Image (cartoon, rainbow, N blue to C red; front, side, top):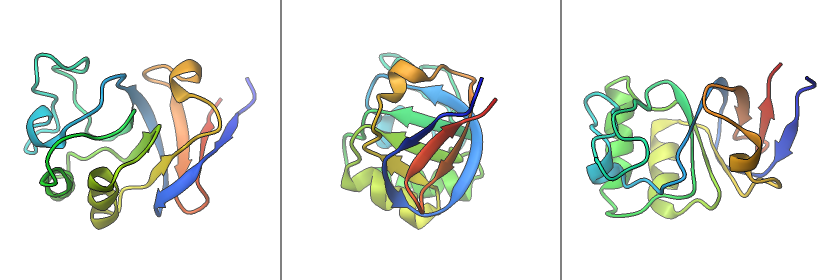
Length: 136
């Protein structure tokens, strides 16, 4: 399969690659995620029990308290943050958290990632140029 590049908008600079973890639910980093482990701890969340550490985390948008930015930073400091994030539409809480944690973040992709990607797929992310690319 040929790699597919999907253009979007770069929010937080940097480039990396990794394994996709999809969440159709928005994420409140304050309350949904354990900042010590990177595990989703909200039993009502579709990713309950899964770990976001080292993943390319794809979710619609963030929600909740502005403290969420600092939870993302704490995940980064504890070595359990996602390697990159992709949103359908990013909001300031996630944007600030990604920027201060130097986590590449892209949003507003030309194609819906939930229709094209599956958990475990390998992708590359470029927050400088604003794109996601599937790997072979």
